[in-house]
Image 1: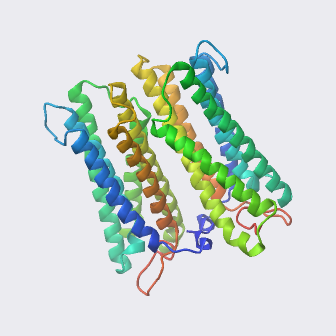
Image 2: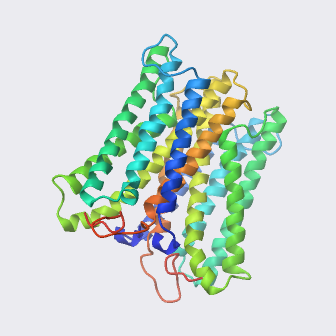
Image 3: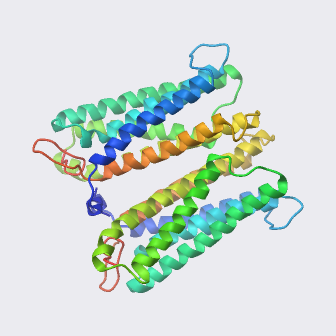
Length: 237
Length: 237
């Protein structure tokens, strides 16, 4: 499959990503602050510790990683600096994601809830490990010290494919997280058709559409390729 | 992104799909029959009506649709017959999926449970509607009466892309379904680290890996392309 045959470029898709990314960030903040009472790392109301988890996973991890994926399509700077931004944003996403996962464990431990029994937790933890491996392999192969040119050339399509798969796993984990938390809340009496339930469902839907546009932006060729700039497609790192 | 640059062919991936497809089919049957008491369309124990839902959605809908996607990579028959099998398997998947969704509504209605409040139900119902639209557009464009050749050529990459997106949505809906049902059972006292919980988590994991190999099989070029046969890549329907 060659995405160039689709006959459209990544540029218009990247604008949808920026806008939908802002939209889902606002939605998750409205949920965790307005409906769930706010965020805190230390609190007697342990729910406030939990609330850090969805905020950091969606804004800190998924949104930042999404922008990192798109760097080669949106930033008109030389390839070396594109790589620096790509690596840096992914590292920020990794760290914020790890802190977000720590918040979930902290909430569980301080509330007497057991850890790591749900498919959401398995997939989420597995995905951030794959994400870290992908980052390390990318760093050593394409940045420093860098693999020989012939190896880079054959490694790059796998870097893109594996990266997009890990991205899809992260989106799947986020979708599972929205459903799991809402199901808990509904078991405790939250009205199934109330404002909060609808908000969370629509946030999950918006995240899914957001991810579709990130994938499209990543696989489509960049609109214009002025000399000295590069895209994932044409890069021979 | 051109998947031909990955340097491998679809054929070995398709064998993994067949085998993992059989494995997840056995797993969901073990869950619904051995752990959940079996399947029935009419029963005083309404849970038996529900059990039809995961079985039909995973085996009847997702597994059959997966094989339909791979027809162009695995069946060494002329293009016309490949299309007939592709369309027929997808139609079977659509019908079995619709019956599976009916079973979920029937269970809800006969048990006094409300419908369509969860993100799983929204995504699942939305996806089967998109699946039906995709089938109809495919039928009329590529089979009968068929669009003009120039239109087919530019429509095909979109047919593949939209089809794979709908497929990913169906996988996401299945993953949400496993988590939602297990969360309900655990709220009602099922041991969170017991055999059944582990079985369902591992089934969800196996379905995810299965889907990765379906996507790989779909986007990778076929191993060999003897004259008269075709692949999604080379087809100019």
